[in-house]
Structure formats: structure tokens, C-alpha cells
Length: 202
View 1: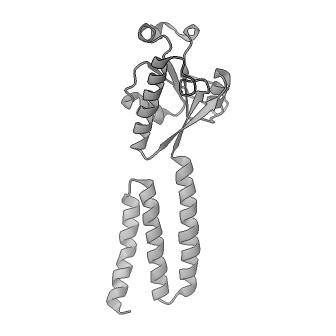
View 2: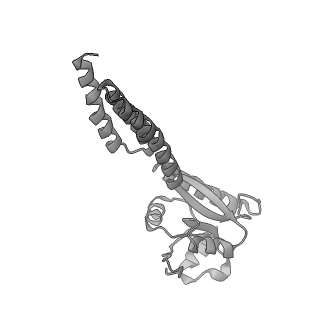
View 3: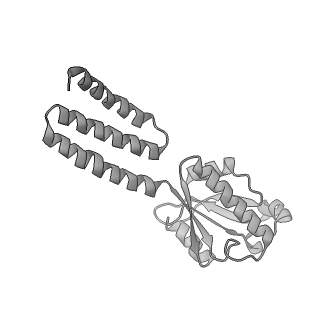
């Protein structure tokens, strides 16, 4: 291999590194990170550092990509707690079912644009649902709000929907995103600040 080929391969190293830094999609960044590791391995091998090339291939590429993939997969998830008897499981109210389905579709669209996936976590009752939010098992909860829970602030919602979907969110960034972009009717959004002590502040 002549010097020009070495220069070309070496130039791919900072180029691929720049592409990783500028990449918005984390899954595409993983692929480019793999290319970066392969280029680095090739450079070390060409320059006669076979031991370093092997270390780069095993640790810097294979292991690093695996760990990055696990981290990306686990962190880009919005966990939404729902009741098992929500309209997704039993058709008790067609209007409520459509409203809940529209909300889920909106959330999948909103977070899909940010390369996140929506995961529905079912709970048996409102107490366990609320506890899951307080224990930070989920990022948000969504359930029909009973009339006994409504206050004067929500009167307008009850005029159009007997059971508006009460959505409590503990992550401020997620709350801001949903409040700005969600278009589903009959949704009551509330931000819940969940401190480490477990006490609830709204």
C-alpha cells in the first residue's frame, strides 16, 4: 500500500468522527461509530501496530458499539403508565376509546420525531398507577379522571367530556413537549414534581 492510500484512509478518521458528532439520529450515530472504529482498526493495522488494531477492533469497536446500543435503546423510551381497564383493553365507551387512541397516536408521532419510542405500562388501579409515578417507574400516567376528582379549573373540560383523560407527567421536558404539540381533545395535562424524598409537589 502506497503513501497516498494511507493518507486517504487516515483522512477518513477525522471525517467519520465529525459525522458522529454532527449526527442527530442516535441509531445512525451508532452505525457511523462502527465505521469510525473500523477505520481506526485499519489504520493501526496498516501502520504495523497489529496488537493495537486487535484491541481497537475488540474493545473500541465491538464492545463499545454493543454498550452504546444498549444505552440508546434503554434511554430513548417514554414509559406511560395506564390502567388495565383503559379503552385499549375493553370497549366500554367508543368515544373514550377513540380519544385514548388518538392521544397514543399523537404521543407516538411526537416522540417518534425525537427518535424515542412509547412504551405502555399497565397497572391494576389508580393507586398503583400513582405510586408508579411517585417511585419513578414511569415518566407519565394517563387515566380517565373521575368526577369526584375534578375542580372548578376543569369545569370546561367536563362540559364536553364526562371523563377527560388525566395525564400526569413528572419530567418537565416531556411535559413541555406534550403541552406544546399534543392535539388530542379532552386531555388534562398536569406536571408533577417528584423529589427524591418521594413527596409530591405540583
